[in-house]
Length: 73
Image (cartoon, rainbow, N blue to C red; front, side, top):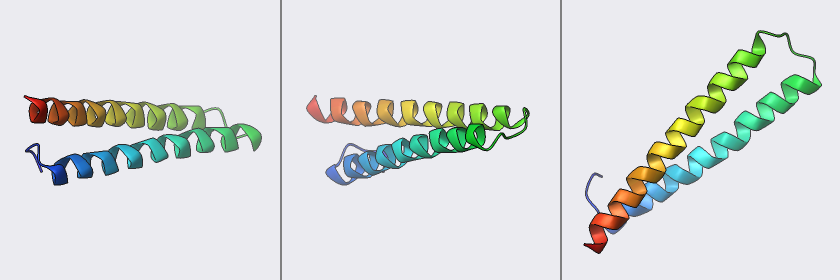
């Protein structure tokens, strides 16, 4: 799924949607932890999860844009 076929682009779109939904889950985890008075060390888990998801989403969007650009040329 490295080429710029329609199936590859569709798969990349699905992965971007999954990463976006994971971002929503990370925010929900952080919000629930704040509401329930989670211990201070749990802030690091929320922050790390959020950071990993943002990097994943960024890379997948770049990969999708690269596929779309290579298909255009």
